[in-house]
Image (cartoon, rainbow, N blue to C red; front, top):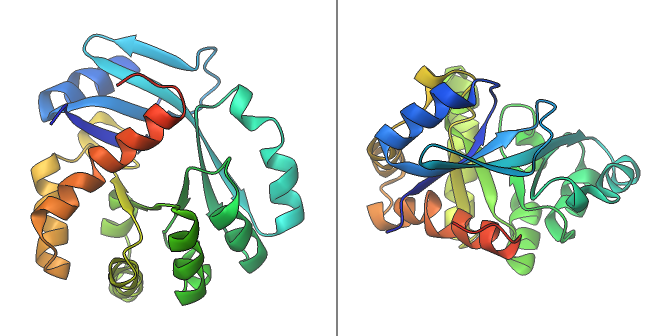
Length: 207
């Protein structure tokens, strides 16, 4: 184990995030772009990787938004708010993960799972978004995660933290998912270590 990876945070306070992340056991953090001039930056003991999160409801607009994107962003995730955008995100090589949250539930279905399995595209589940959802939405997200495990689609758990105190200890993530889904804890560990690490390395990030 080379340390854990938080695949999505939303903050400009990289110093505080870096300090807290390192204490929790993370050595790499993907941070949503807040106008940063750098692509990759090491702060203390933590590597920060600039990430773009695209929200799109159709294939045409998503294609436009993806054009040339990898020259600036090592990591690209898509929140599809329409079926055609979801299907394109599943098969487009410029997209690193497809996000499952309250805004995208309706488009993350069995067909999406099969496509993502075919193209080896990971599903990304932001934990804070899940925790802040109401009971009905939590149940829907739960069912989608269970479906993707059934189809052996790789899953990444991220914090989507906006502040340092929203970072989640790796053991907390493991305990939550293991309790909810009765998943082998080793599978959950892979979701915050080896699976995101493979994506980062594939995009030229040394971690």
